[in-house]
Length: 405
Image (tube, rainbow, N blue to C red; front, side, top):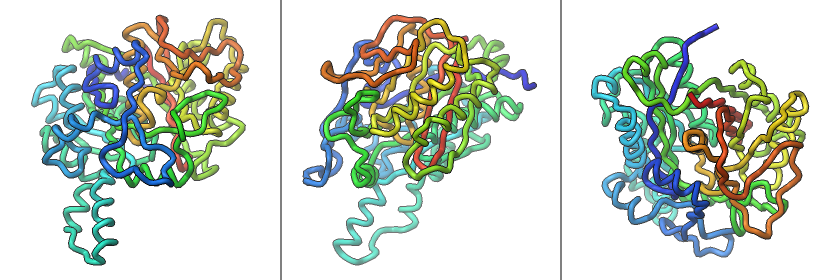
């Protein structure tokens, strides 16, 4: 059995909730709702189900990405800078580190402009080589160049579980002894392409994202760039690093059931979470909190609760299991969602609160398994062990187990 432990020593975040981790802690504990009108493309069309999202402040987004057509590269640099400073990494540390980036499709902004121009003119005037440089794997390479990272770099694009898998990949790289330090996370600043795609699937809410509500009607998109500094535990202790949490284990699988939907009976949710628990050598009885995938689509939330309920039925948990979906405050950050939710879970652990599952007062929460609580507001509570779920389109499912050090 591999005895190496992997811990989080740095966190960098950018989303609608703020520009750093302190902003995110305050937003969660203050139960803030940070939706904004979409300004980056025209949403004045009757076929769009919604014209708002969890957008990064447009003025700030324009400021940090003014010379970056991808937008995503600048946002990634912003959050990696925070994480690197938080962990106290030196240039030599960065040189020897590995990088794992999760994203859905890379920068859809440039692709959208290219096709708009082609449809209007029927001429290929766009520089195709330049266009390809906006792909997600090229952004990973650009990040390496910017920070002088010479270690292995990986790009993961498993839809909305991408950055959860990037953390899992980082865990593996350290546990196998290949690296002492890995920068892992994800970035996704949603484009008109992504927004239109979810709209065509009728997956967007017509009102607001209300996970686990009986009247939920869909998700809302959100911007996110979140990166964690993962380090070998012994290495972190030797260098007197502040440790936020341990990444105990993860499990990923593909259910091969449906392009966009989970199995209705929750069996694959159960399998994924059970796999992560077994790898971590713990049971559901030891888990205090689950940051659910919780997209607020009519089918997803019920299936996820069924899978959790099956785990609880097999265990002997006496105290309350708290469940919430932080997508109620961040929106669905696509390829960055897994890292976003892992980071928010870690911050909640370190500040002794359960993140809220924000719902309007007139919304009724769906039936839950026994001993489960879905809090509408943030509550003071110690969290020692948590699961963060990411269940993506295409059946790409990932569960991370996080423990307070």
